[in-house]
Image (cartoon, rainbow, N blue to C red; front, side, top):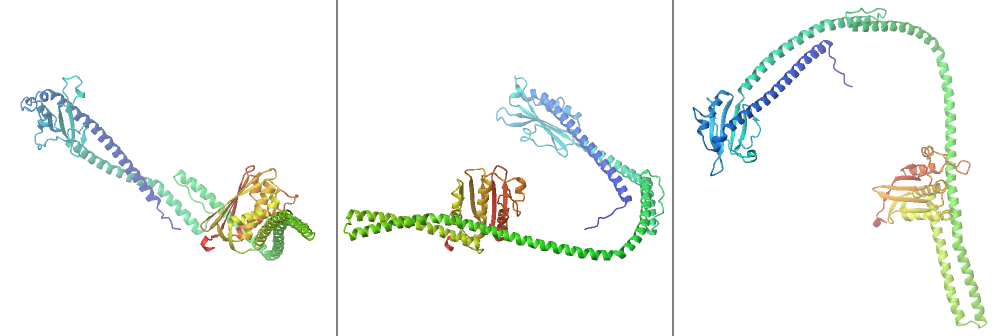
Length: 553
């Protein structure tokens, strides 16, 4: 950390007073010059416009009737009266030619000693306001024939161009600069004198005060007292310093007494520390043993949850398989009975063509029934086998997500068909990823059962939506239901172990904890829950997974 550069109080006061004086001077001069320039610009613009209007008014008749002598005649011409206005250096009067209708220089005035100015044909039409340059002002006033009604609405018959010198204004500015320089020097000198006065009245007492404090500190004479000064503020500081010195002196005596007592206490402290350290170690060991037992119990309960889920699925699939197998057995029994009848008829030579034909038709129907039901049973057993293997295994394999989720729903069919709930899966049929199907299986089953048991407890027909997307190397599962939602206090700790709303009704509170562990540990992903009471619940699951392209399969 960089050390700040320190400055003395003397330098600070001197600099501050000088800066205030200089800034005040600069501000005052700037405002004065600005206001003076603004006023001069306004007055000069008005003066130039008035002169131009007077010249334009007196030029109407000469310009209208082409009487040039009335303007520039050396004895009687109107323009000679402008000699009394020293600042006007040039006046041009322009007239539109009767034949060519082009502007022509009709009459002009040049101040004595001024250089000749070429005609300003292109400029007179644009100088509608006075234009200031460094040395002069330019302005053009149109000449209208007032003998016609509404003359200002008609085109002008000519223009008056006037140039006004700024020599007097420049001299005034030079004088102002000189006086401002003198005033600035006086202000700076007064600021310096004021600075030294302040330094003598303020800094000197402060320096004496600081030296007294340094001597007290160096000599550790905390029973001494600093002297008062001629400044009220410094006297307040001196009183506070004296009070602090008295407190320091008292604390030194108290510290010496306390040090003596501490020395006596230290003689027995070591034995107490050893005794309490041993007791703390024993307590820590007991806590570690208890924690280990809790972890073992938690692992056993989680494993029990997995096995209970698998057992429930086995019972459901067994019940589901019994139906097609029973139908197949019934059809095979009927076929066997028909075969016996045909055999008996053949032996007794009573087999007719019609009876044989009926037997063949019925046999075909029975064999189709047997085939369909055995195929159905084989599909159920295959799906169950794959789901059971995935649930118990923890290895990566290629998984077609759409088919995988459909197999999971098939394994849950014994539970789902007892309700009217609807499960919608939105996923690309060709999406294949490399991942661990076992954790995925357990996650989806737990979420579905959680919705059925808790979310749809008071509903006859609920909706579960599962949307799966793959982007880059991340698979996202958005699971949502339109159930009763989750209370805020439960939602905040829903992934904690043993959190349940059905305690005493068979709920262990480990279902969502198991889901969380499978997502974060087995899949190295993350899960977030969003829910409001009465508005359903949704879970967003993301985990790394590599998509397998079709040509790689």
